[in-house]
Structure formats: C-alpha cells, structure tokens
Image (tube, rainbow, N blue to C red; front, top):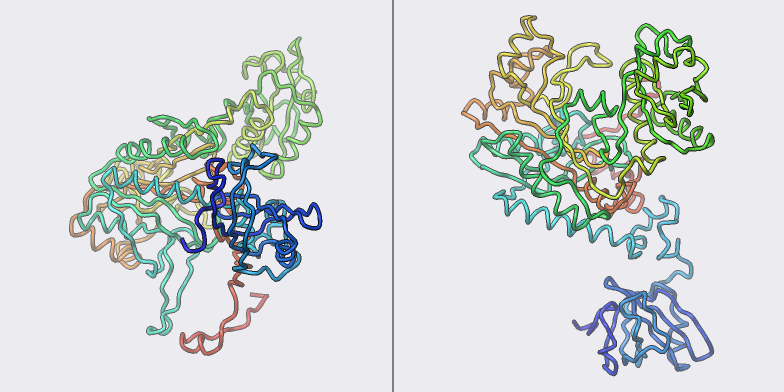
Length: 594
C-alpha cells in the first residue's frame, strides 16, 4: 500500500531496526519536554507509540489537533518502558517525516474518542463517525460482519440459495405500519418498503426453488425498544419446500449454536435439540412466551389458596393470583422494595410478597392477611423455611404478565437462581391461531394469517359450524427464544387456497377479500404449491445478544434514535416543492382536533 508498509497493530520486537511507514489518527500527545513527546497513532488494527525527539518534529506535532490523520515514516526501536497490555507494547517508532493526510480543524471534540460510550446518546448518534472510531464501539460492528459471514456460509453449506427479493413492492397487512413510496409515473399510487420478504419467499417455493435464504432488510414504521430499532432491521430469512416444522428446527439447531459459542460473550450455547415449550405452558409456567431458561424460577397458580383471605387485591371474582417461590433468598428489605418498584414500572401492576420463617410462620409484605391459613398456603406452594414468595394478582392476562416480570427480576437479583453466562435456546410452539381483538372485541388472527392450523381444513370447518371453539385452534407457528429475547417467528405455511379461504372466513373475510389482499400468493397457490415452512431470525437481535449489549443501537453502524430520526444525516427532513410536484403530492396542515 502506498500510504503504509504496516498497520498500527502489526509491528513487533522482531521488526526493530526496520524503516516503516504508518498511517492513522493521532489519538493522543503527551509532551515530556521541549523536544520530547509520545504520540499514540491509531488505525483500524490497533495503536503504535511514536517518539518525538527533535524540535522540528515537535513543531509539526504541536500544529496538529488530536484526531488528525497523518502518515509517518520512521525507524522501529525497542521500547525502554514496555506496555504488555497492547500487542505493539514492546516497540516504538521514531519518525523521520510526518505528512498530514487529513487535518482535524477543531480544537475540541464532542467527546473523548476512547470514552465515547459515556457520552449522551444524542451526541453519539450525531457524531456517529467519531463514535465508531472508538475501538470498543467498532468491535461490535466487526463482530456483526463476522456473524453475517458465518451465517451465510452455514446456510450455503446446508443447501440454501441466496436470492434477493424486491425492496419496492405492494402494501400488505403485515401487522405494522408500512413505509410508503410515491410512484412518480402512477399519480396517487404508492409502493411500500417490505415489512418482510414473506410473500416473495413463499412464491419462490411455489416457483420450484427448494431452499432459499437472504440477509434481508425489513422496514416497519414502529416505535423503538431496547431490542428493536425503528425503521429498518435485518433478518436471516429462510424458507424450505416440502418441509415440516421439525425440518426448520433441525437447520437452525445446527447453524446457530456453533456461531453463538464462537462469537458470543458467553462460550456455552444449547445443543440440539432445543427444548420445545407449548405457548400456553410457557405463559402459565414462566409468565411469558419469551422465557429466559437460564433462570430456574417458575410460576405457580395460587388463586384458590389466596382467594377469600381478606386482602382486597386477591378477592375479586375474576382475579387470578400467581406466585413465584424463591428458596433461600438473602435479599434485604431495601432490595425487595426496589424489586417491587421495578416490577411495577415494567409491568404496570403492583406485586406483593411474604417470607417463610424457620418455624414456618409468614412474615413481611401481605403475611398478616395470610397467616390464618398458613398451613394451607405452605402445603399448596410446597414452601420451606427461608422461602421468599412474590405474588401477582389481577385479571388473568395482567397477573401472568406481572408474574413473568417477577421471574426475570428475581433471576437478576438472585444469581444462585440464574446461570447467566450461557446462551439458552428454546422453541415456543403451538401458538393460538386466533384471539379476541382488544379493540374490535371480535375474532382476529393471533399472529401470522398464513400459518397452517393444527387439524387443517377440518378443524376450521368444525369451528365455522360451532363444533370447535376457534380460540382452541393452534397453528404450526413457532418462536425461537434465546435468554428471554425473541429471535424469530416462523411457521409451516398455509399453502392450500381452500384452507386459506376457510381460515380467513372465520375473521369475516371472504374469498374475494383474500384475492384482493394477496392476489399473487393466492393465484400462485392455485397452480399447485408444495408444503413449505420457514423462519427469519433477527440479525440485529442476534448480534446484540452475542455482544452482551442492552441496546440494539450498539450493534448497528448508523442507527436511528428512539424517535426514528437520523440526527447525523438530518432525516427525515423537508424536500423541495419541485420534488413534491413531480410526485403529485400536496402537503395539508394537520388538524390537531382530528
């Protein structure tokens, strides 16, 4: 390379005496005297110490601000004071000449590069190109590159073809808001950015491709969370023809554990087969359909034994009480109060608690209401001296949710109940096909409307004729969960038009509605589609877990902020009237009353 003979992480003691050329950013300057200074030069690969020993060189360095890019030609020599913490710590370079490649024109930086993660997130995102100079921040992006390469290699090894699908497509009800793109040549009409390649990959199976995958960009106009980036995200999208649920499981159970073990913060990952947990069992036992199996705590139903105890929150006619029992919990009252406060913030409901003393008496929290039926409670929950019991009460869904949060928070509080340093996978299976919509109060699809119901056409007909409760129908839908994080949803697809129409009729949509909403897929299936199944693990969430990060933005090179804004590029932003006119778009003031 013309601008360097070596990188800043490459030189070793065996290179002493060699004349070299290095290029990078001037990270730090430490002046010791009028003609002596130590300069840290940094590039993508590491750092090398330069030693300035002449007045001429000192003048050149003093004229530069930190983070200027320079090229240095000099001689390698052994360091008198070695630094064993860095690979180049045994050598230093004495410059013979310095060339300025890119001058930093600001005396003050928005943050110290090596401590950028301590800066305010808004500032980090505005100056993301500086934030990424921090080796710790850059490390996550490098890991992401390596993980994507490993995923791609593994999928190809399993016989999958990488096929790209369109970015400009038709709007389709996928469960979130679309990003719409106006069509200049078709006034009043719009493309949509795909929420997922769902229909395209199913059409590929219908077209006769056997195994498809891609590292697919997906676009959803939804709010941010710690594990969800607004706007766009990437997933390992895959589909298999002539395949069952078990075929999909077998592929991912072979692909993911070696990658997690190699690249993850923890080097232990579940081996195949991953544990399968039916949805309803997961909700009852763990309080969530995203259980963290590193935690050995579970949820018990305490409704019968708690009802009528005289404590108001436990006595409602439709009240459900859930209990989480922790053996030998050593937490202080201050820790318990904080636990309850945190659970209330997360779940929106107040938890309750009590302890079991050595004589099996109940103390603390709501114990005074429960003491009269102590023996009954101890027997029902199989309590032992030293047990701590956390309780959640309310309508069924609310109580289950609060209990799930209690399990998670108690696991974090009690390390003896959580084997934290491992990746624990599980499959959540047998999701309900239908649910009662919170807003409509009517039957709606619970998750993916294109899933094959357990029982096929017959169970749908039985439901339509009143012989089966639609809410009891389960689907061949499955979620892949790791350490309490949902990595992916998938399903065996409903590839039969007759079954598809019957499934939609239960939610008040007829054949014409199906044809209108999903014309390509419906028509393609009418030409004879193979049974097929697939899944799409989220790449961003996967890398977030591997890196041990709490925020997904730490593993994305240029993430948006929580308000779906790119503060670095100024997006979204206004455009010129000429552009709007070309697209036949008129901006209308929003009426706040509407």
